[in-house]
Structure formats: structure tokens, C-alpha cells
Image (cartoon, rainbow, N blue to C red):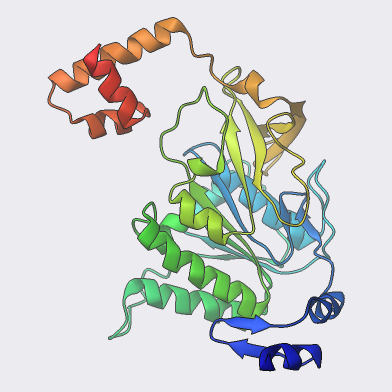
Length: 328
């Protein structure tokens, strides 16, 4: 009763992990907060910890740089809205070498693209040494926070998550990683886009949140998530699909994915919007002959000495399916 009386008088009550307020108090507090602005259409809003994931070589980094460049110049990527003002973004690039980055944003290493000074690229200093008493991961997170404080930037892109934590595909490694990023987001009022990858997947099935490596913990702690899929009808096409959202309804679902192609009209490698489509038109058709081929491969790998689990991983099928096929 004492807690209820305090809350009714407009007083906060902190008990362990919880802050207790009346619904009216929470609403009054919400009124003082700004309405989240779009950073990349309905895919990513201000104040969100968002995950962009895809298989290797589908263009995660290309799209991430394009999004960062868009924000730094306050130039939207057609047809996606950009509501936030021009501002600094930090792009933590743990993927490309300097020359690889140069090659993507120039014409054969000449006529370089003119990035805005608001686009700040950060890479690992190979000469830096980890201080005594700290491991690499802790020192990396400390350095990340110091970079945020020293620049005052509020928009952060991390390319990619596997560099921050080895073995993040397991729940036990994903949980502390997401806690650290969430804490940084809340402490410094950040908007964070993290790039992740998908393990081998069945290309005849739609993309889901379960396709991200370490999916259970990563999806629980992120505010939003979207993915890049490759079209099976045309390998040059990609599609973007919304998989988790809190600040909007699901706009880009299986019935309305955004189809794009990667192009470089001048000196900037980018995703170019093509049209909207149903995801099923870009999925691989699973025919009877495909099933027969998989059954043959399962038996062949089993004879070669592979375990059922190894076969399941290699062929991107479930352990139960492997077991069923071996009994045929």
C-alpha cells in the first residue's frame, strides 16, 4: 500500500531493477520526449538499436555506407524518407581495408566521391596495444564509447557485429554484446545500426528474424531489424524486408519487399530502388528433383563419415530431416 500511495502522489518508486510510476506519470514524461524521426524510411528510426543482416556478399556494407552518407548530407535515399537533420555519423569499419573502401567510392582510384565531413570513418589502429588488465573486447567497447564522447555524434553504424564479439552466434555471447550496445544507446541517446550475418539458409523459404546469427538474443535486445535477400530469379537483384519494428507498422513484409539493384553510375557504389514485389517471386522454387538431390547428398555425406549434425549444417536443413532421409 505504501508504494501505491507514493505513486498516487506523483512520486517515483525504485525497487531493484524496476522504476514504478502511474500510467499518467509515464504519459507526461513521454510528452517531453521528441517524436522519433526516420533515418532510413520505416526501417530505422532515431533512438533505435537496429540490426541489418544478410548473407555474405549481398551488399550489407554498401547499403550501410549509403545510409550513413545520406544522413551526413541530409539527402534521402529514394524512395525512403529521411526526417532527421544533417549531422555527424560514426562509421566503424571493421570489414574493408582503406584501398578497398577507396575503390568503392572512386573511378578506378581516381575522381573520388566527395563525402561530407560529417561522415566519420573509424577503423582499428593496428599499432595500438591493449592495456594490461584488459581484454580486447573490453578495450574495444571502451574505445568505441570514447569515440562517441569525443565527437559528440549521435548516429553510429557498426560494420560488423562479428568483430565485436567472437562467437556471437551463441546466445551466451550475444547477450552481453547486446546489453553493452543497449547501455551505450541509452547512456548517450544514440541511434545505432549494427550489421550482422545469416548462417546458411534455405533460399526457398522467406526471410525471418530467426535467420540472423544468434537470433534469439539479438532480436530480443534490438528495437528494429531488417534484412537483405538475394533474388533467385535474377542474381543481380536484392530485396529489403522489414522483420522487427516498434515505431511503425510493418510496411515492407512478405507481400511488399523493396527490390533493388547494386549500381555504380559514377563514383559511388549504391543500392538503387527498382520496385516493390512479393517476396515469393524472388524465392527459389523447391522441386521434386531438388528433394531427390538433397536425399542423395545426405546419404553420400553420411557414407563419407559426416555426422548428422554436420550434414544438417552443410546442406542447410534440419537435423530431423537428415535423420528422416537416412532412414529412407
